[in-house]
Every structure is written in structure tokens, then in C-alpha cells.
Length: 468
Image (cartoon, rainbow, N blue to C red; front, top):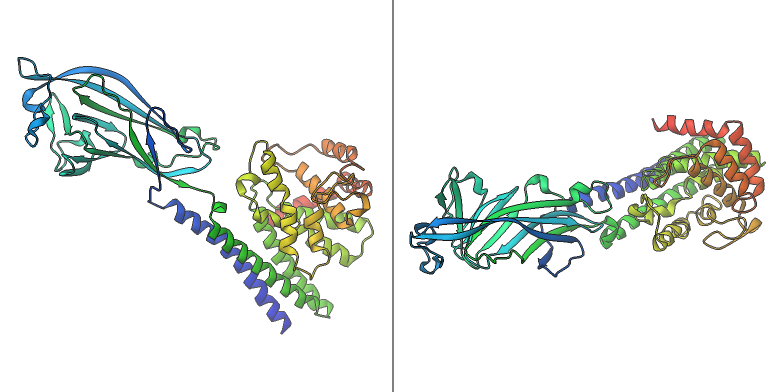
């Protein structure tokens, strides 16, 4: 009966973890598909925006003479241009206007458009690369078109054909909205290496009577996709599901420990190992450079504990403690964990908090002795300069001193976002240098023996093979 209940609880906890991470993917997809343009940047020459850097350049201009029959709009008698010569020609100035949008924020801009209100009568020749939503004559005629497709499309907009040009007359106060082409979405965040996709350039050709015309005011509307960690509802639901899953797992382990027979105990412990291992993979998945990190640290810790003469049950316990030593990383923003550059002091403090957060998550997990000790103290230093408590020497629990050395060894022997893995000789040198400083000298001596005789390499290979 206990075995069946245990298995049910383990399955429930694994499902809950899956729901948590699967729900995150669904939530992110839902946010990314949002069509709402929640932010508005009212651009002018002296304005600034937190997310967008906008610049407008009028690259070239030329004079065009348009017959008087064209410059007079039959719908509005007052729309005739003033500069009409004796030959009945209106003189207009043509301009190529180039608008550059650059995403300077740490967030992805998923959707955007540009809204412009004409400050005077004008003609629109063409725009690239998207479409124009034109509200002509105060909204009397409205359509979304690519002007280059005229006259091959049906539209309720008035336009004129003149010298192979198709010009759409716009009255002062008419609204024009530029809708980007599909390839112009999204604007990638500035921290991305893909700089080209964080910037877009839009071009438009217009004709006006006024040669001093400036294209200096417009509204850029956009939708920012924030990190999931900034949505309170997601954080509450995710943390609640993970916490409930951990409690279910803990209760299952308590039931298993109560089973007396060795054969049943061994079978159940295999299930526990798989369940905790699955949970550790959820933890490692937060950081793309630490795949199987928890498995390797657990394996090294068990090996060192055995060589130091700890009992079989203590070695088993330190293995599970090693698997869950980075539990607190669940609560750390993935962008900080995967940041390739140097951390700011604020980001470093956030990273350091994974020790206390991990211990808090595991505080009710009492089936395995010292389960919180590994999470809380594995970054303490032997010389007392570590965190979070500044413990020194044997004040630091032995299990944490062992995990500290094994965690550092795995970090040095693995590729990380800030550097490539170190050579074995460099790792051995670093461990020797930091004996009595960062690390317990006795633990380091045992670890060095394991490195030199190839036992650590065997554990790393077994992790790779099991992952395949």
C-alpha cells in the first residue's frame, strides 16, 4: 500500500514540475502572440524613449511640377496649391524620408507600427517595406495598401497617375499608419548578438508645397515582451506548483524510508533517485551551460565521501543533497544565470541569494538529513570569506565542505557562459592554491586523488552516456 501511494505521489510531483515548465512555455507563447500595442512613443526632435531610439533623415529633395488639374482635389475646393505658374502647373518638393527604429532596451519588441498625422496638404508616392493605412479626407476614404501596386488593386482611396507615378493626395490632419512587413518583426533586445535585427529602417516618398517642410512628429506604438519573471501571476503559480511538488516528493520519501525490507527499500530508492534527478534537471535547465551539473556534483560528492570513510547511508544522503544543492536557482532570473558578461553588484547579490532561497524551499524536506545544509552552505569558504553566513573551518558542515569542492571542480571542468573549461593541470593548480582558503584541505586532497586516477572522468562520462 505504501509503495503504491509513494509511486502515485512521485508521479504527481513530476507532473507538477512538468506543468510548471510547460505552463511557462505556454505563457510565454501567449505573451509573444499578443496583438496589443500597449506603449506609445510620441516622437519629436528633442524627445526620448526608454525602449526605442528613433531618428528621421530627409535624404534628398527635388522639385516636381504637377498640372493644376491634379493639385486641385474635387472633394475640397481649398486644397489647391498656392504656387501655380502661368502654365497652370503646381510646384511641389519631393523628399525621401528615412526613419530608423533601434531597440535599446533589454526587452524584445514583438509588435510595432508608426502613426503620422499630416501637418499640411501633401502627396504620398510610395513607402517600403510594409503597407500604409491611409485615412483620406478626414477618414472619409480609408484603406490599407501598398502604393506600388496601384492601379492593379481595388481601393476607395483617390489617387492620380502622373508621369508613371501614382500619388495619393493627403489633406492636413489626415492620419497615416505604417504597418511593418512580416520580416520586420520583432525588434530584438539590445543584449542579443543579433544586432541587425534590433534595428529597422523605413522609407517613404512624399511631395509638399512647402520647401521648409519637416517630418518631425509621429507616434510609434509598440508591444514589449518582458521576461516571465516580471509577471507576478506567473511567479506565484510557478513557485506554488514547484513547492507543492517538492512537498509531495518529500512525503513520498518519508513513506519509503519507513519500509523495512532491503529489497523494497532498494527499489523505492531507485524511484526517489529518478524523481530527484528529474527535479535536478529542471533546476539545471534554467542555465543552458550547466546541463547535468547537479548529477556530476552529486556523483563527485558521493565518491569523495566514500573515500573519506563515511558510511553507506551517509554517502547516499550526500548524493541526494548534491542533486538538490542548486534548488534556489529556480527563483533566479534566467537572463542573469546565462549572462555572458560580468555581473553587476546587484546581479551578483541576486545570484548569491540562491543559497538562502534553496534552503527555504527545502526546509520542510526532512526525509533526508542535512538536505538544506548543502543548499545553504555550499558557497561558504574555509577561511570564512564565503556566503551567506561567513562560517569558517569546521563550523561549515562536512557535507557542505565536500559539495563546495566538487561544485568548484565541475565549474572549472565545464564550459560556462563567461569562459571555456579549464585544463586538468590548471584545475589541479587552482585546488592546490586554494587549500585552506576557499576549500577544506582534507577534502581537496581526496578530490585530487580522484582527479589524478581518472575517477572523476568516469563519472562525467557516465553522466553524458545517461543523458544520451
